Length: 79
Image 1 (tube, one colour):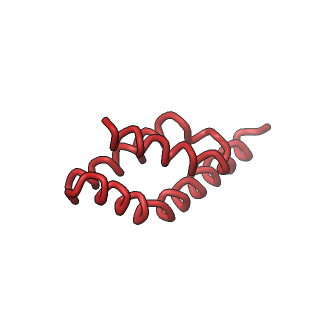
Image 2 (spheres, helix red, strand yellow):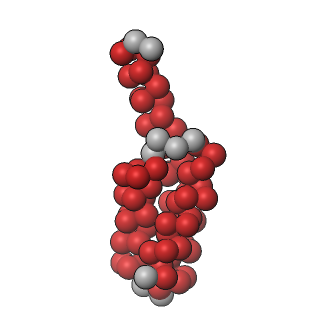
Image 3 (cartoon, one colour):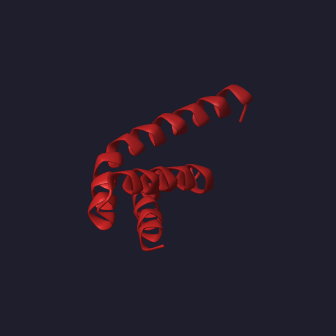
């Protein structure tokens, strides 16, 4: 695979990940807000879950992102 194709795949993956995160952020915030009873804490939890997903699992397949993200969020809420 040449560098241009590899770069296109990384860009495409970034676009897909961004689209995924935008699609789950409202629901994730509401879940965290209900669990904590505090909007500021809920926002921190969602941001932390997003960061961990991007940092550790962005190279995984698109189908794995939702279960991974919600598992991370749930773990953060329980902590």
